Each structure stands twice: as C-alpha cells, then as structure tokens.
Image 1: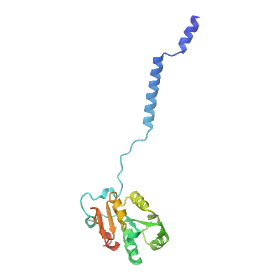
Image 2: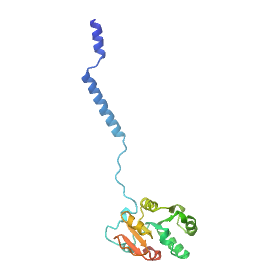
Image 3: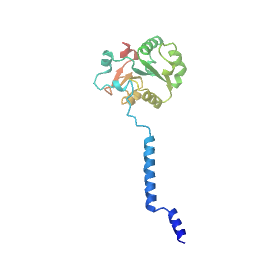
Image 4: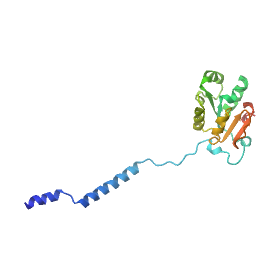
Length: 194
C-alpha cells in the first residue's frame, strides 16, 4: 500500500510549483506578444502644407513675393472660377497647373461641363479633378489633400477650413474673418496669377 500512495503523490504537483509555472508562462507570453507589436511611429508632418503654415505672420501675398510658392498644392473649387470667361479660366488654370500641384473640386451636377471646360489644360491630370455633392465632401477632400492654399467661393467652406489649411482665399464679398484668409473680388485677382 505504501507503493500506491507514493506513486499517487509523485503524479500530483505541489500547488506552489504549479502557481510558479503559471506565472512564468504568463510573463513569457506577455513579453512575446509585446515584442511582436509593430514599433510606434512618431506623428508625421504633412508634406507641403505643414511646412508653410503662416506662423511668421507673413500674408499670402508677402510669401508669394518671397518666391516660396514653387510646388505648392492648391485646391480650387469650381465655384471660384465659374464666373470667368472660358478663355480667362483656361489661361488662369493653365498658369496655376504649370507652376503648382493644382486640384479642382466641383459639384457632381456639373461633372460633364467641368470636364469639357478643363479638357486640354496642360499639366492638369484627370485624377486632380474631383467631384462631390455635399459640403462635407468638399471638407473631406480638402482635409485629405492638405493643400497649401484653398481657393473657394463658398464662405461656409472657407470658415470651416481656416483651421486646417495654411491659407484660404475667398472669392466674393469680403468676410475678413481670419488672419490666414485673403478676400478677393474675382479669381483673376489671385496673387499667383499676377
């Protein structure tokens, strides 16, 4: 009988050893999974826009006069250029597309007329012409594009994006609502065109 009790006690583990094994296993799993996580990336700066935020207090006109406008990303809403004649619009957009990274934002109702009007402008790629049907769509496009300059005829859009875009150019009646906002009467007065 002594043999049965000895063999029974040899198969059962001491509870303290079992707890030590569980703790070592848990710590090992924790360290294994912690090392498998991808390394955390630092917050990346948005190229183009973030480097040109008007912190120095310079206006858009002063910065353009300094010659620091090469390869800017510019978003222009169709409403801002609609009032120009076809020839004036073509000349202005050709000039902007040749010296900047130009994006056109238009409403979906105007898609065929916009595409016809913009056809043949050199340096303006088809993927740079975007259509949306709501104000939220315009906002989403602008925030994803992170343009250096937004040119729009929509006052609400200008007000909304003042926090996210370094310079906003409002085409139409003067609003004077932000230090990074420039009011112009028509798209032909845009400083990069003069």
